[in-house]
Image (cartoon, rainbow, N blue to C red; front, side, top):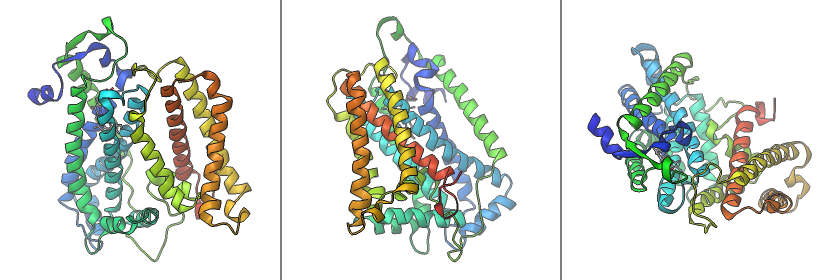
Length: 410
Ligand code: HEM
């Protein structure tokens, strides 16, 4: 055990990097959750039947007849949810400490791929019980997927399959294997970069042995996370509704919660924009940011500088206000498709609303951000904040404020 721990870590680490608010231990937590997922996943797989006809009954059997079956299922479910949230927070912490540039470029890209894998793992797992929740979530999600040009239909078949649930192969072998290999590579690249990015020089950079300094701290974080996870798993059961029934649709029919932001976009934009143009543009932007030319070298400070902090705060407030008002305006005041009837919907309900948002963003830049004389990295940070806040607001709206018939509700 000591050898494994020492191989994963360098012999010495920067003492200042051990302070909790530097990383919040998020990368390590995500790694621990992968291990927990794999162990509980293997246990569940002993009882699970991967066919549309047998899947649901096998989960009921596991839940009711197998010793600790329900508990293991709960841990597996909640560790998946935790992993998604924690990997997302880790992604934010890496961005806001500027650790995505120069030698860390590639790790940022692999990190984005890891995030995608974590989403896919959650999604494929969500389908396996083949209950009403899974059936209708997959119906909505694959409808979203089918708007993707060229690959939409084949992607749907890749996930659902025919007699066998292909999601099972993806969820229990292909994706976990890819995740494991990539995470190990991810760790190696952190070491290759000389550890995590740290601000400043001199005293702060004193190096200390990894054992016990880092390993002890990791152990504490692992214990607390495991305790929280087990408590949640004892208190809240993983959801399971009635057996999938294509004849009885759920109302509202929602995608899994992490896709509710995209589903919310679909309520306001033409599907080509909501499911393809906007998500793809965001992904390209995220993959592109390490390759832009910046004014200064990364300094490792949270939010770059005082100005960076201030502009991020105001952009966050602006983005939340624009997104909430946009949702309300489109729901209660103007429907672009009706207002501009006669024009193809992809323009009236795609190009037009997107241009309006871009005009608002440009106005915010022109009348507020430009006065702050931001550096290029601070400006990119502001755009990132805008996108993240809009995404979070859309997701919260989709999860909590859409009721029967997907109407807005309190
Ligand atoms: C399953 C998912 C992931 C795991 C297990 C993981 C694990 C880790 C660990 C253990 C570290 C060391 C420091 C720390 O704890 O913050 C780290 C650093 C890093 N991660 Fe991740 N990570 C994951 C996802 C991501 C994502 C989604 C991104 C971004 C797109 C990312 C980008 C990075 C970068 C660039 C570093 C170096 C940070 C620095 O030098 O300060 N990782 N990761």
